[in-house]
Image (cartoon, rainbow, N blue to C red; front, side, top):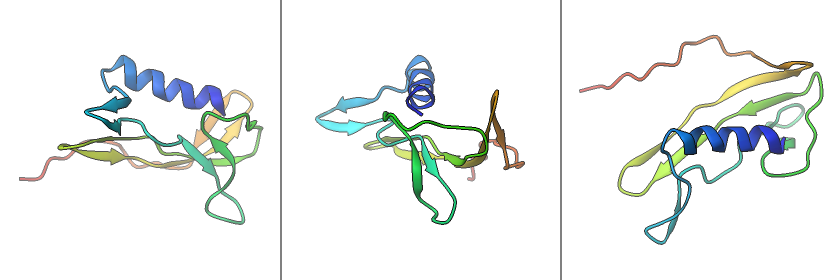
Amino acid sequence: ARDVHKAVLDVFEKDGFKTGLIDNMLQGFIHSTGHGVGLDIHENPRVANVDDILTDGMVVTVEPGLYYRGFGGVRLEDLVVVTGNGAANFNRLPKQLVVAP
């Protein structure tokens, strides 16, 4: 789980979305990447900077978000099943930004 979380953080950082103390406030990617889903909506494994292991068949959320003071934030959530070579996304809706007037 730690590797998945770090990969998300690395993509945000590479694309210019800094995380950390900005103007004396924790901003950017400030929470975990996701969590397990099963009998409860929030359960282990945690997809975060932790030692939890992701194995075939586990169902987890992938819900990275960015938050900046004075601007706002965004968080998208997908539900995926862990596979031997990555993950399969249950969500089929397109992801596109629509700016309303």
